[in-house]
Image (cartoon, rainbow, N blue to C red; front, side, top):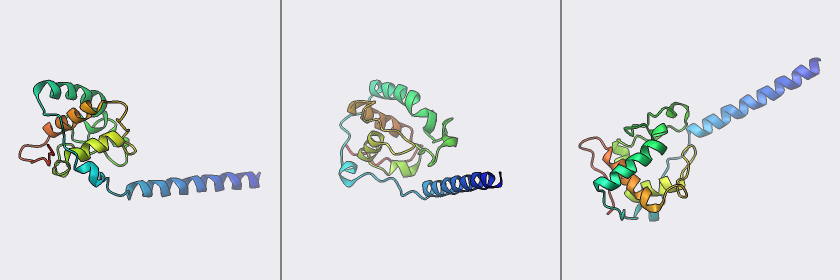
Length: 145
């Protein structure tokens, strides 16, 4: 009985160590930077009322659970995520190019899924435009058009 308890304790200690190691690794993750080629891609979609309305519907259904309806990174699922979702209203996000946002949305990185096969390229560019519309007043976006 004593050996069985010792083995169980050892297994629990190993799992705890693995969990701590993985948690520490997730928190020290390298910044998410799009490749230079993606950063330089220009957005071919000019924002207009119709495309922004369509993108808003996609955003609310697919992005707001993590990023929040206003894009602040405070959606209901955000608390459980590591790293935390991006604040789409922030100056830091505004510094990213449209091509970078498009690439990140297309490729994904855990916990964010890839949307390459979920949305068409036009829908993803429209989402980039919608995300730009969420910026705080006075924040200048690094748009590539």
